Figure 1 (cartoon, rainbow, N blue to C red):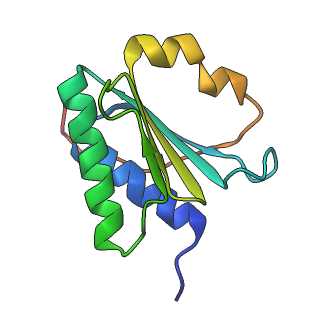
Figure 2 (cartoon, helix red, strand yellow; figure 1 turned 180 degrees about the vertical axis):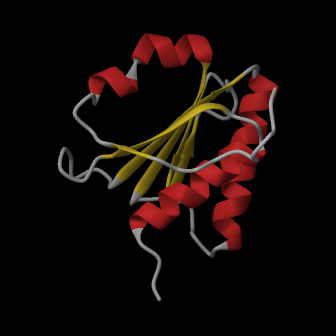
Length: 123
């Protein structure tokens, strides 16, 4: 069975979760824009952590033979964008995430529940 764009978003979110990204959100963009089907949005604690999150997402996607179309922001690591055509992943610093407020900007987008995290796992 062929994977859907929602499956791809979930794979990216699972990669972010594996790297301990914070506040992972999946927005269903299909009814709002032709740019992509889903946004995966999260943030990290530091530039090093943000790069690690992006690396883990890229590895998870590669393992499923999902090719990245484009990547931006790795050098500065305040906002890394990973473009997989049907899914666009945004990995922010908390400050940058709050400033750009994509969840508010796209407030009409339904949120997808990812079921992330290990039961009983706490930080």
